[in-house]
Picture 1 (cartoon, helix red, strand yellow):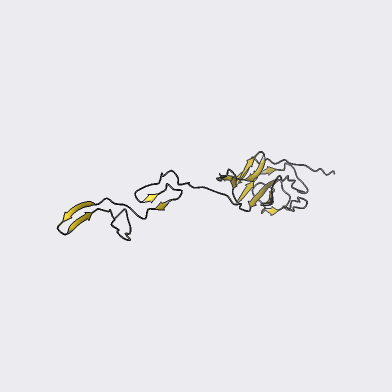
Picture 2: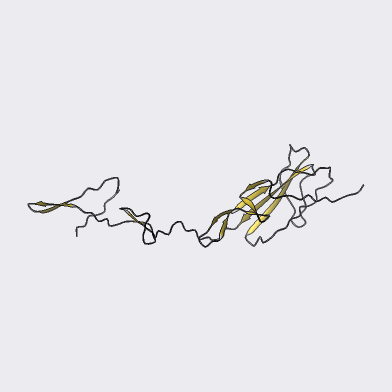
Amino acid sequence: MSTKEIGLPISLDSGIHNGTEIKDGKLQLKEVAIDSTGKSVYASKGVWESSVISIGDKVTAFQRVVKTIVGTGSNVDYKIYTKSSTNNADWSDYVEITYLDGKINSPVGLYARIKIELSSTPAPALLTVDEFTDGKYNTDYVSSSDGSLRLKRNIPLSPTVGSHEDGFLYRTKIERSKLSKINGIVFQ
């Protein structure tokens, strides 16, 4: 009886992506945004799980997972897990591979699945919500023209002036729903 080593190529396109995506044929964390400087912002973690892989014959051993890692950098970590089944219904638990030699630690079966977990250390990103420079939020009580969004502290009013025997009477109406508190009234 002879022993043969059979390699099964696994497509990363099929399977379940959760926080991951395929870009230029490589598995990576999903791009979730572009920061204000044009740099990509990625999910902090993600998981890819393969479709069911049919081994197609009785095998005596699962030997190893061969992987190619490109440009992971110092802030990306990965873990690779496998599980197996003899009938495609009852599955073993996911077991992490041995990274030194890629050894698969799952029991032998006719079917297999692979799971890859990716995680990264968050990198600083500059995200601009709004520059508040064009006055689009300006109202009677809010100002947004000078680069910041702020409540107006001094609200000029145009009261109705009426004469009275002892002087003048200044009168204006302020709707209660517009203000929650009046700290003071100053006449100039």
